Image (cartoon, rainbow, N blue to C red; front, top):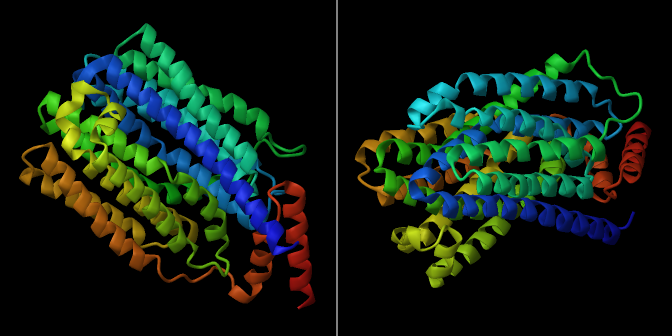
Length: 437
């Protein structure tokens, strides 16, 4: 297959993923904006804290997705997904049960009126984990159209179902119940679009091994998402309620900038997982993310009123002058995210210690923080330091298989079409060439 055809395939995949991820993130942002406007600073700060719990719990779903995508990318799309699906379902049940059991604790920590406000997080966490299996299968197979469709379904469920519930019941509980119901939409869509092939085993003897691998991947992702959410938890627990709401509104912009270039990480992950000769592809991704982030920072700096409209409107006017700093935080976090995914794909064992260390650094600095601006600057400084460290950690790579054996596979796969037939044909050609050598 010609390199021109490979580039067209890559461009098409990039377009599909970008559209799907953008639609999902815009929908998630739209729900956040509706919640901020509908509830006001005090009630919205509770929703922001609980959504932080959802993001942290979502690391299991991301671990499932990462493990699935890596296994499929390396072994091929025709592998039996039974063990992967079984592991995902087990993880969903365990995670949902744990979240439900911890609801009273969440109510106490976040000063909620009732533990029932936190209970819907259990349904959301379980549904996201099941969806993670389907997203991983599509990502590993490079079925970018289906991946994009699942992403759109996730966003549509959040904004349509969640927004409707919030409109009918304008409270923190109404918002979280709507999020839980909306999370069931991609579960149904994924069961249809990324169904198990005929003959797939419903269970798998190696499912336990998959679970162990998921937990290993999730450890690093847990550290990263704990780091990205610690500031909203700290703000809710230590700052005055109104100021915590202002900080949470600024994080709307930071999260938007963080999620905007997610498609770069999604596209790069299968290449990173195969450990091909594209050893520093993540450096190119960092440059793309930095460019997108700089556009966002400059735009908010020049048009702060437009940025204020995005985070909730006049009720949050006191955060107006700091919005460009929140955009800078989102950019730095997005770059850290790509390096974390690189460490997951290539099994850099030391990365997790550095991420946990960054979390400890933030917590150690909290006693010296007097207001929301001080907390923002503390988190930004720690993220920039972590970014520098992870650049060093991920600079070198020792592939699991010799590069001379992996190059044939990488070269064939890099120009393969995204559909299953071309993917399988490319792998067969590569394997045949390897046997001849």
